[in-house]
Each structure stands twice: as structure tokens, then as C-alpha cells.
Length: 354
Image (cartoon, rainbow, N blue to C red; front, side, top):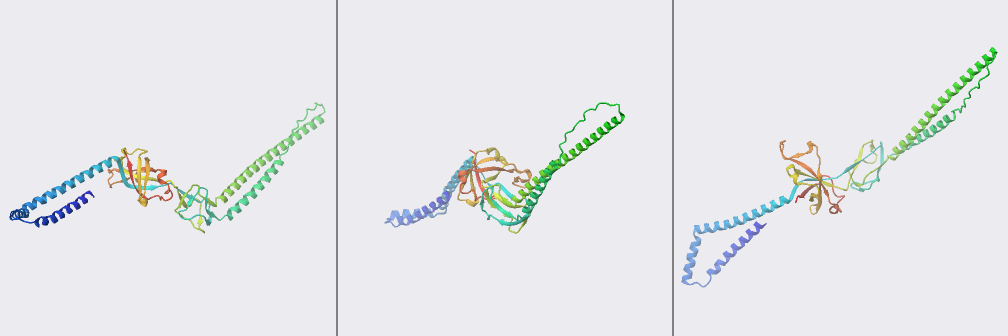
């Protein structure tokens, strides 16, 4: 701009000098002045004088250009000492997928594209008929298991083991045989009762285990019924919609994504510049989608990237690599634009290193 203004002024001065020359010639001439003017004109009209004037003008012009270039170069050097700038930068944000935990037919969609949603909001509903039936069946099985456990508990006999009192020894052999037979019979009865008690106790344990299992089945059936109401765990902007009414969805299938309203910038800098970049340094951010708005931020960290994702300036493996740097927005600077950023938007960042 300075060079352009100088050229315009130079042209104006040249025109004024050309316009003033005839005015002098119109002044009342005398013979002496007329002769001197004619001599002066002859000198001006000579080729070497014209060349001299041309060279003088070009010298002045080149001097001005040289001063302008030197001043511009100095300003650029000062700027580069204070800022590191790159246009290889992109908006990034946390993207949370919303998935289906159960299979079913989509019966209702409760959101619109690019809608702002809050945590816990139900976004998709699936057909519940099969899951309601499974829950009813599980509850019936639970009630049956409960009754069986109670019945098994009642079957456990309460046995008081009576130890026969010792009988006086008699010399009557017949009496001795009767006593021995009685003791043997009593012992067999007690053994049978004890054995039956152990069996009933085992049956009661099995019935209790079955009851606990049926409780878990009821809990599972209730959860699966609840999962037919697909809700988001986080708030943000809806994106990547991949569901419609009547669609059969499967467990683990991603139906949509939620973009968090807390974006950041990933900017790539040549590795030789990393020694000048430190956390907490101020950053000026310009996003191409909002070119008239300048955002403020700060350096967060040098991001880790797999080897295959690091960019280079050429195909040579010895070229300097560009390393990603994570930059956070100032919340005050981002106000009003939180939901307008989309991951992948290009940006230009200037890191203030001094």
C-alpha cells in the first residue's frame, strides 16, 4: 500500500510540473529571457539529460522500494519472533455415540437433526411388546420359585435325636436279643430320618438358588424393557443420524452421535518450532466459518498421535514432521458459539510465544 501511494504521488507531481511549464512560457518574454528559455529547452531535449532525469527518478523510486521492503521484512521478523502461525488447524470435539442395547423395531424418534439435547433425554423408542411378555414370564417364574422354596423349607423335619438309656444287663438271652434288635431298629430309623433331613435341606438350598436366579431374570427382563427407551447419557448437538421409524436395530448399533459443546483446536506445527510452544501460552484463533470473529485460547498440550498419523512436508522420511498441538478456547470468547462448531472446520491459529 505504501508503494502504491508513492507511485500515485509521483505521477501527480509529474503532471503538475508539466502543467506549470507552459505557464512560465506564457509570461511576457524579452529577447534575453526568450533566448535563455530556448537554450534551456534545447538542453532538456537532449538525450543525455533525459536519461539522467530518468535514472534519477528510477533511483529515487528504487530507494523508496528498498526502504519499504526493508521495513516490511523487519516487521515480519518482529512478528515471527512473537508469534507462531499455522493454517493447518482443525476444530475437534468429543463425540459420544448413542447405541441400542437391545434389538427391536423403531416405533418413535424424538429428536430433529442438529437439535440441542440434554442428558437423560429419550431420543428413540423401540417396540416393547416382546420385552413386556418376557418380563411377565420372568415374574411368573419368580413366584413359582418362591412357592417351591417355601415348600422345601416346610419338608425339613425337626428331629430330636433320642439316645436310648442304657438297660440293665440281664442274663436272659431272649431279653438281650430283644434289646439288641430294638437298638438296631432305632439306629436305622434315626439314620433314615437324618438322611431325609439332609436331602430336604439340599432341596431347600436348590430352591433358594432357583429363586435367586429367577430374581435376576426379572431384573434382566426389566432392564431390557427399559432399554427400549434409548436415551442419551450426555448433552450436546445431535449429529450423524442413522435411524428411522420402522427400522430393525441390533444390540451395539450406533443410531446417532452427540457432539459435545466444548470444542478445541488441533493445530499442526513443524517439530523445530515446538521448543517455543509451552502450555498456557495465549493463542488467537480464526475459524474459517466465522472469519469476522477472532477467538481467544491457550495452549493445552502437545497431543499424542500414532506414527502413521503424523504429517510431513514431503514424501521423504527425513523431512520435518508436523506435530499436533491441542489448543483450548477461552469460555468467554466462545460464548454464543458453543453449539455452532462442527468437528473438522478449518482454522488459523497464532501462538504468542513472547
